[in-house]
Structures are given as structure tokens and as C-alpha cells.
Image 1: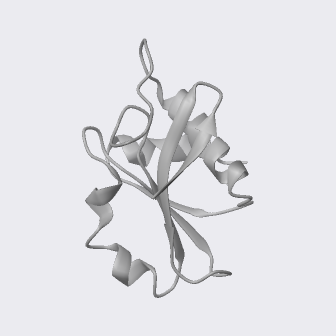
Image 2: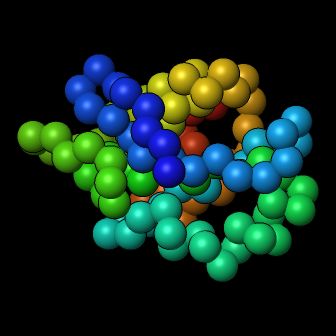
Length: 106
């Protein structure tokens, strides 16, 4: 696993699959981590480079003081994509993770 530094901490992530393939971002639900996608990754990596990450406050990603917001988590996704030099990606999330797409659309 790898991590990307943010202004106020870090995000834990895994990037798997064929280099040069379209990127699919997988965003976990509330109370889970990037491993919630373990069973789906083998199928997805046949066609995509899969980027999954622990959202803020989950798994091995940062825990910060105060409340969290969808907007803040969306900015985290953008920071992760920017750090990995990914210009565009498909996005799939479950529950809370499904709301993250609202902000990252550029």
C-alpha cells in the first residue's frame, strides 16, 4: 500500500491493474476501508487500472479533528488524483463513497 500526503494528513491507497488502462476509482462506504472492494478488484483489473483508497478517517488514512464533509472528502479525491497525475477517471462508490463523485467532476 502507498500513501499520498495532504495538507492535513495522508490518504492510504492501492493502484492495481494494467498501466495505461482507463482508471476506475473505488470509494468505500462509511465504516469500511479499501478492502471492501477485494472481491471485485480481480474482475475490474481485467479492463481498468483500479485506484481504491481509504476515505478520510477510515482504514489507514488520516483522522482529523472536527467534522467531515462530502465536499472535504471530494477534495481529498482530487488531491489523490492530482498526486498520481491522473487527469480523468471513472468513479464507483458505495453509500457515502457514492456521494464523492459530486465534487471531483472537473
